[in-house]
Image 1: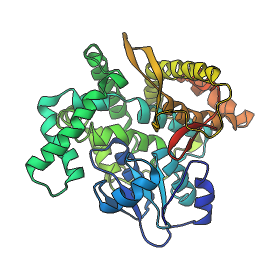
Image 2: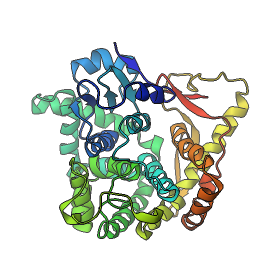
Image 3: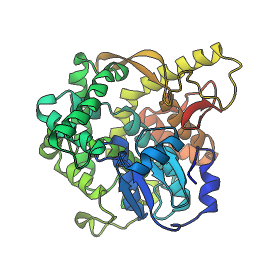
Length: 401
């Protein structure tokens, strides 16, 4: 029997079934998928046995997707028949079930930095969307057929083009929701170049963000840097020309080996003394400036929504149209000298809440250890965010807790 798991069920389920279980996990996803790239890399580096299937697989369509009430990929099915949708929930479950090697650094500074990189990279790097869909001449033929293969993996070119163009038209309709209008194109390109430059400098001296083990921050970066920016023809060309070390990191993140040949003498451990390299701090400073306004504006809209719904029941999805990741309205936020008009992503607040909740549990000593880094990166405003009501997920729908 297939049983969907929500975020508040994963700990109990993981504790009841420690270790690998009977048989492999099944990852339903696609190589063109942002979040599948993040999850596939995690499973490989953790040494978790899995098989991968496309969303066109009959078991996914007939059993898994209806149970999850979602067609979003990736979806993970465990050997015991649990079904998990959303990478944050998957990682919560798998990290508890497979603690070694840890994807969560033990030190408070590294852990906070890893959470922040994952938050920003997983939710805000719209450059992935921009470089895929706003460069149709070099990209479209490859991208359309990639999506077509997800529906008809052995189909003719004509069938691949037919199904791939269905997805392409949907993405065109998504443009307004995420705020990527032509006036934002220069900002998107500069954000990509700045990210490549920061990571190229970092991967000169380190195999991963925090030393010799990949963290949730590394896996968060794999969403955009593999599926879109590291495979689609135009952004891949830019990466290879401008940041070959980043391209090599993307390659290595898709292998099961932890130690790369370039860093054969780097211990497979996080950096000692809870060190966060300056190159990571440089990236976080940019992320905080660019994306904190999105969270502040979205939290304000959520406060307005909560005030308008003072008796909204606990554990009831907040969308009245059964959207799993609803928008709270429109926001206008500054980004690189432009004003970006976009939908307010309520799901991002739920992901931010994970970091806020963890940060609130720190001892005074650990919080003090983080304080200098918080001030240096400009993360104080983000970490001071207070949500009007706690959020959760029920039936893979965003709900109030």
